[in-house]
Figure 1: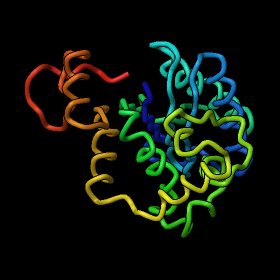
Figure 2 (figure 1 turned 120 degrees about the horizontal axis):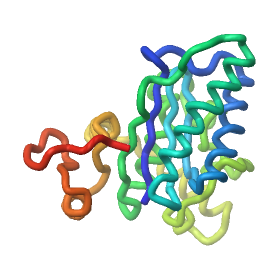
Figure 3 (figure 1 turned 180 degrees about the vertical axis):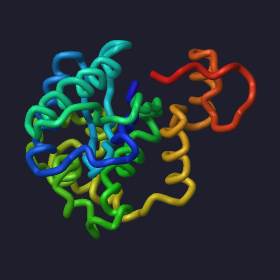
Length: 219
């Protein structure tokens, strides 16, 4: 099941200092995702945090990938800059995503991050995201298209065109709020029926502010 993953720098400090740092992160992520069985559908590398949309092949695939990134990328970066210490803020955050209705909304949310931050006017203007691959067909070995994305159209060019059309509609304030709230709280992105099923499976509340069964630590 797809998951929206967010990781921030300690005290929201920078985790990328130069262009080569983002290249190093993408290389390290590709290695970790292949080793531990994760498909990356969308990503954005901001200055002090990252967003990923991934589908794990096994229950512990995403934890293993993120643990590897906490070691592999940090060790390589520390060696590069002759620095010591941690880089990431505690544990990453992850939210289950209902693929049938919310996956493409989540992809848009991720790839529009630089636009919302005022860095660029259009997502194509930011080089450190999956937008160029999903919307423009640029080769990106890190990205594995999700079946929901592939169902937009049969041919690559027409599929990319259909995907670009989705960006003509901005995300509503409700959608933005839901994405932020669910991700920060490690909840679930989906409709009420999906959330009901996930509460039965997980044995805990997956809705913001809902009382009832105790909440487990997110993984």
